[in-house]
Picture (tube, rainbow, N blue to C red):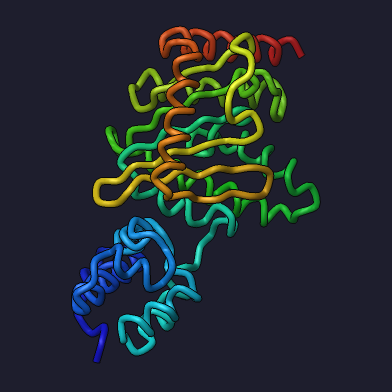
Length: 280
């Protein structure tokens, strides 16, 4: 019977199913590109499913079972593996983020989720869902803070962020919340855990003015870019699309302040907020 190999119990369900997909594809003598043609996706998409960086969606699972002759294995197992504590539009990106070797993110308006403090995250979620029960907000904050544990490792993933100056100036939750949030970012920079640059207002127009962008690269899978707007997001794997957004990110970095000058500005604005809070 298909799918009876004993997986390593320390491996994530997504990675286990991805390994089974690779095993089934090789049994059929198919390359990633050849399998992709049969199920109407790119070869790189197949590679990402095999590496566990992309979900095998229900409709895709049924196609794979038919093409690979796996007797419903993927249809049976992918639903459980796809359960997530994150919103649907972000779930796949969050799961890919957790496996990335390097993350490069541009955030025009908000501190990136990986760098947020509990108080800052709570204010963001409450603003977006003003009528949600406190319990729901607490769940969202907990999930966001859990993502931040990626930075517990001293070296991986490499995290490089470019922050729009509005991230520093938009007062989310009041001066005390902002002082704490920016000091947290500064601490991570000083610990050499994060590379950060600030794109100043005077830099003028720039490419992704209407949303954030996250580039992710992996040890054994093609790179991805995640593009996010208000309550929406999409994960792209097309090489030309990823290359275009990589160039955009490089141009943002070139227009931004140096990491040293950015740290000075972040700490200065944090002190301004702290002083403002003390005057109240």
